Length: 275
Image 1 (cartoon, helix red, strand yellow):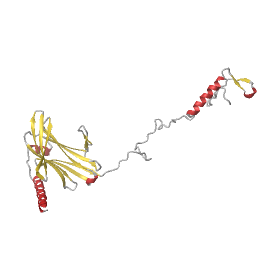
Image 2 (cartoon, one colour; image 1 turned 90 degrees about the horizontal axis):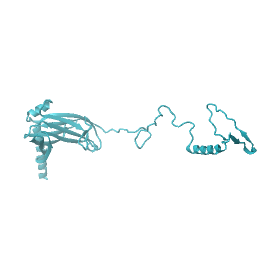
Image 3 (cartoon, helix red, strand yellow; image 1 turned 90 degrees about the vertical axis):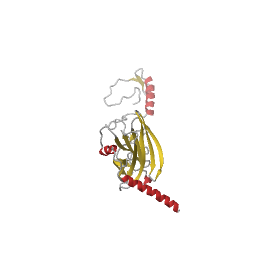
Image 4 (cartoon, rainbow, N blue to C red; image 1 turned 180 degrees about the horizontal axis):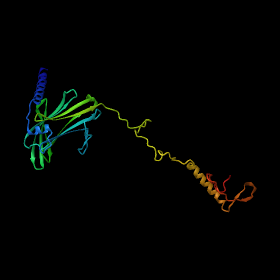
């Protein structure tokens, strides 16, 4: 038990030593001075970008400085270095700061660019802040003396992140060269439909013409079955009206029907139809 406590004490001592080392003066090189000053002239450059996620093709989506707490929600931070000197050893720290100013966690690495022309690779040794003897090697290929590092802040509810202003910091050679602030806001339900309890969450759209007050169905339109029966009666009555005469019922007498002109607004009656 005592040996376990001693091991944990040594780990924390190493972590504190690392923090003290980072807080102290680092190697203020030409690269770090340029990046701190935001110098855009030709030479070493650093760009920092925050986004919500990355597409399958590598495109950064929802780039910005405001992010919402939610399931599968994260802040992805990218540090894009370019124009760095080859065959030189660099140190890198990517640090996340809470709204109260306390450090949450960091990524720490040592890296070196090697290559020429359009064939380059960055050899990275990722370090464990609590165990500096541990290192994870990674090689990143590129067509220029440039490299991108990334880090992720999980905003899932189970992480219990406090809303507020956070900061993402980039240290090169133990010098702070960039700090990006961003806001974390609580989860908010965003309505997708309008009233009525529609389960498909889609807004009901009126058919074309309704907005102009037009009647989509004529007032004298008849149901389908009624139209069929009317056509049949028209055919039957049309057979007896070819001669221009119509039957007069039980008397058997026939009378000649005089052509009449329908007045405007009156519906025409089929020939031979009973009055």
